[in-house]
Image (tube, rainbow, N blue to C red; front, side):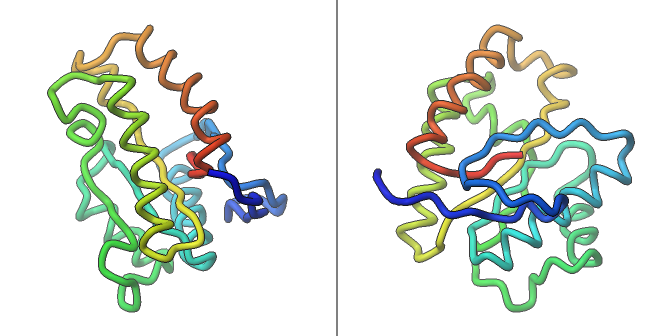
Length: 160
């Protein structure tokens, strides 16, 4: 895939960045997490990107409600434009985290977004499930995080 990367807003900082960044944002508390994620997704929606949020700190319905209250527009969104779902089943469709499988999911999400006419894609996934549920080991998660950065060079899904 060769195309010029766009410069995008992340919504929570004034600095624009090239799409396909992988940001590890450390929050001070849940309120900050919610506010930053709403800004991040709203910015992606305004840029006409396809959005994904994998949640585990609250239910999908609770997150959808919070995002809507924070200005993310679900009324005018196309079907499938914004996906909010539970993190653990998304990261572990076979019951256990698999690096190769997850990298293919990210690649497929981005390519699907472009095929559907979006200018790009962005998403975020909460990872608390991997520490408490024993569905992943640290080595596989570190391998995934490193290889995700390489994947995003070619398939510029923006991840936070």
